Image 1 (cartoon, rainbow, N blue to C red):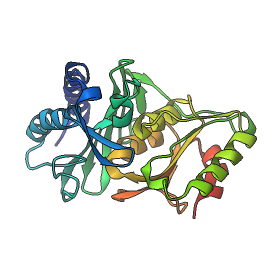
Image 2 (image 1 turned 120 degrees about the vertical axis):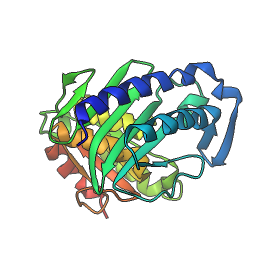
Image 3 (image 1 turned 90 degrees about the vertical axis):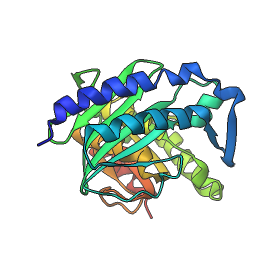
Length: 259
């Protein structure tokens, strides 16, 4: 039987070690475009390569679903690691220091471990199913605020919304006019964690991949929050979709943007 506490400790060590690559390479002068506003760098490749080799040793027979190097269509098996080696690659390329490593472990069809590491602030967000969520070892909870007017909302506007400009700005206008403010950092995994620890009251972004939100989903839920998709249903392990995460009351207020 797997000891998830020991496994998480090893995951933290590996993610922190791999994050040194963020500083060792030069993403601003060494990147490729995968599509509009969609970058990939040697940092992405190297972090994934290093972690894949180590993670697969931790659980015999496990496999890796990840963004780069042909791993994006991997099968979900009994134990599957779900990795985004750099969530916030556009930020990395521009020197905007908000990029993280995001990692989840799926056991059959359940997310059992979630971990997100922000090397710029040395913040390690983590959760084990049924055991709560933590930031650098301290228990975190979602915001207690129940008033939309007093809320701070994170909004993602990634590449999936490029053809939906009017709809996107209508959503942002509503949030701007009816809340305490909007924030957009550009890394869904980190912003979900902000909705888990109360820095945001909620976070919303459409058209994400499983590696963007798998870890954050468990971290938010174990912090007492809710994560739904853009159809208003509880998020499972869909390969692609949108999410609204945070305190249940504010998530319910944002259901107006589901379809």
